[in-house]
Structure formats: C-alpha cells, structure tokens
Amino acid sequence: MDEGYNSLPSTHLLGSVPAVVADDKKPAVDEARTGSHSNLHIFPPANGGYQAPGTPYDGNEQATTNWKGVLSISSYSPYFNVDTDNVVDRILSSMNPLQGDFRRKIDSYPDLYGPVWISTTLVFMLAALGNCGTYLMNRKSVPDTAWVFDVNYVNWAASVVYGYALLVPVAFYFLLQYFGCSASLTRFWCLWGYSLFIFIPSSLLLVFPDEFLRWLIILVAGAASSVFIGINLKSYTEGSDMMVMCVCAMVLQFVLALFIKFFFYA
Figure 1 (tube, rainbow, N blue to C red):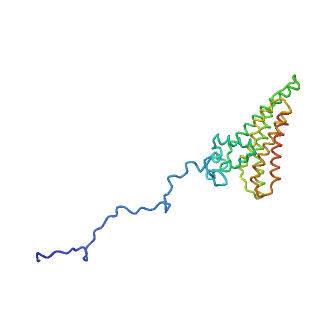
Figure 2: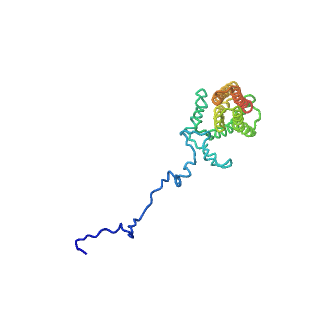
Figure 3: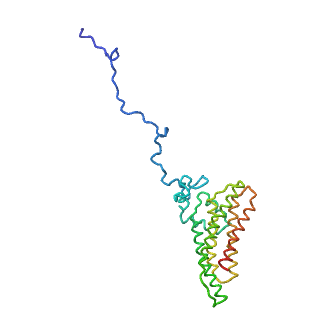
C-alpha cells in the first residue's frame, strides 16, 4: 500500500459492533405519582386520627378514624383528651348561660371528661351533703332527735344523676333526628353534663339550715341551668318550629332541681 494512504474508520461498516454503554441506573419512578410506596413511613398516624383541642374539625363526630369498637377503651380516649383550661372555660360558660357561646366551644371537639367528672362529683356531694343538711335541719327543729346516716342517698343520687345525664340527651337526640334536625349525641352528652355543674356549688349552700335560703338557692340554680339548656338546644333547632321541645328540656332541668331540693334537702 501507498504510505500516504490514510485508513478510514471501520465502525460504520457491515459486521462492525458498536460499543455497548452500560446503563448503570434506571430513571427514577415518581412514587408520589404512582402511589406504590408513598406515605408508608407515616402510617398509622402518630395521633391515632385524633383532632387535638383547639384545632378546626370538619367532621360530624370526633376522631372517627380512631373508632375500634364499642368495647375498646381506645375508641373513647379521644373524648377524654382535654386539658384543664378547656374544661374550666366550658364550666364558666355553663355558669353564665346568657353568654351563649357554649355550642361554639364544643362544636370542634366535644369532650366527655367534664360530664363524667361533674356527674360523679355531684353524686357524692348530694349523698354526703344531703345527709349533712338533713342532720342540721333536724337538729335545728328537734335538738334531741335521733339521727342516722342514710346510705340510700348514694344509690338515689347515682341513679338520678347518671340516668338523667345519660338518657335525657339520648331521648332528645332521637327526637331531633326524627323531626329532621341535625344533632350529635356526643355534643348532647357534653351539653347536659356541663349543665349539672351549677348544682355542685348549690349543694354546698343548701347545707345551711334555713328553708327560705334553700328555696332561693335551688330556684336560682334551676332557672340558670334551664336557661342554659334551652339556649343551646335552640341553636340545634334553628329553622324549625321546635320551641315546644326546648321548653320541655327546660322543664325537665327545673324538675331535676326541685327533686334535689325535696329528696336530699327536705
């Protein structure tokens, strides 16, 4: 061959094999788009689906994702996850019924801790102070009369207070559902439970052996508690002619106050 001839590249000729480029890594798959592995590292939620107090809540019931059955304690634990400030704030609202902001405070997260604590405290207050008030009245009228502690006060107080706080909200809940009004059983339990708080300080004042003062205290307490129930129940019946139902709820609340006076502080 002639020494001046330059050799041509032969990679494009027949029989030539192009170099193979190793594909070390494949394009990344958009996991967020495919959803195959997305969010697995944050499941289940750390808070169990519970909406913490003070945060907005859009559902009809609280912590529906945390419901694990009627017999499971964890199903009810979100309703007891409330701090002292919230409970005190709701108690003060129940003592001032004309303020009218109690429903707004429980709409996002109704609690059952307050109603259970109030009902249990009221049971023991009525049983103990009712006996004490009866003793003082008997001692005032007949100093030499024999007197014994009536343990049946505990049974009566527990039956009346727990039965009223549990069954009356259920009855009004089903009545409102029947007439087509939106209602929440948990919020009704919360409402009626906090309405009983005013009878706790009243039971302390009813110990004084003065019949006129006793009647004044129980009438004021019964009226305030009845107004509190009527105003908040009316907010659930707006747009409907349910005034009769609100009046019935107020009458029942006042009858409870009279029962406390006649039975425990006669």
